[in-house]
Image (cartoon, rainbow, N blue to C red):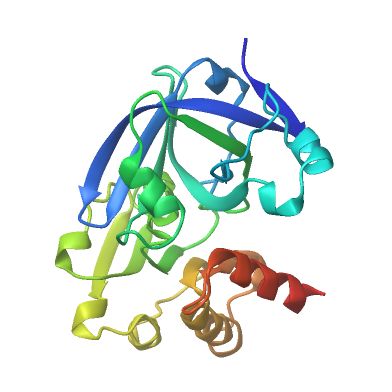
Length: 267
């Protein structure tokens, strides 16, 4: 039987790590599965995301794990930490779900966990959510983001209609962080390197914007996202309903601080 609990009407799914794969020096893939995958319901979005739950070391949690019971019975500092990640692949036939993690040494929570994960470890998920998928009623597609958005960009590129014109700008640390990206679209993919001083905003601003209706996906560090939001909406006139744009993180903030700031901005 699938091991699930409930949070706000959504299932908490317990998966088992099957294997890990090193994609680049700083990108790791966790492939998980097991009986709990039967409780996972995929959606139609290419930015399908899950909340990965990380138990706090030294805390004993009720079993079977139930997030509502945890929140009711344990102090807030003992609640599992949450991080948001895109589902890179879901294969019901193979019984596998893959998530890609950026890993920069011992800093942070999720990256070090992924680097040390081994077959048999638990992976607890909430979701998925999502809001974006490439449309077939536009003239071309634009993707712009950093390594935090690369899994969603890669999934989006795989889903664009065959032959559709695509421009993609992806900022990573250096050439070693580039990945093969599959697409049926007529894609021009530009890799930008942080180590060389490449500027994602400047690259998008300087592109030949082309003719016709564009659908844009722009995600990653909040600073460049804010600049590109203004550029695409105000200077390029991209309608809001054809623009998926969000800051995944902010320089100098950990995940809890960044989520608190976003909540305060929305209040």
